[in-house]
Image (cartoon, rainbow, N blue to C red; front, top):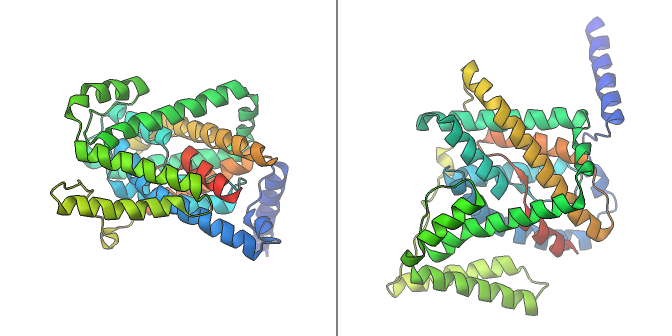
Length: 341
């Protein structure tokens, strides 16, 4: 009897705290009210476009962070499925982002951990980040975003876009550059390697851009990302057959996936506390900035605390699955927004 009363008290206290802090433990149920076949068709096209963009992006962001490509893919899968159930934005697309990848890279470069420790330290970093996000959502810390001026948010989004472009130029030109954690470092490394540009890679990149923009201009209602990827898969295969092979990433086998092992050393957890706090703040700023910008286009309002809560749950899921830190993605969210407009 006493145990039942104690459990009931905890449930009531949790419900009271959630209500006071405007945290809905399952907001997806509101989106399902009045959901129609038209919504499903539109969402399916958006989902297909976003998913086909997210897989190569996830691999790229994992490589930027100095991690194997599966970390980016698993992060996208976990965050897109879990964070979306608990967040407040209908436009934000969740998963790894350029900013979080760069911060993860700088964190491990700064800590100078042995290479064999990284697969254990990363899940701990992501788990701590998710915990900080959930705690912050209940303390209404996401409200600090509303005190950040529109000019700062615009500057941040512009900077993030420039960093994304800078990090992808080397892939478009077909060469590698030394790891860099700043925009100017990436630009400097890119300029130094320009003489080594791989012509087939450049041709493939320009052809991809031409096909995509032509489709967007003349066939806006089609899943243009998916069509472009299929076309370029055929083009790259033909190039390989005529003597211009395109370098591909090493395939991953899901059968090799193992349960995540979290570290047992207290010292390592202690080292990761501040980086996790910084990562949680960056994720909140990035996701809420993108979410508010996209919501303003359609006259919606973003519940920033709910968004922070959803990201916290999504990052904990990503940590348990073996992925990297997840945030809202500027490019995927914009694509999702345009697909639903």
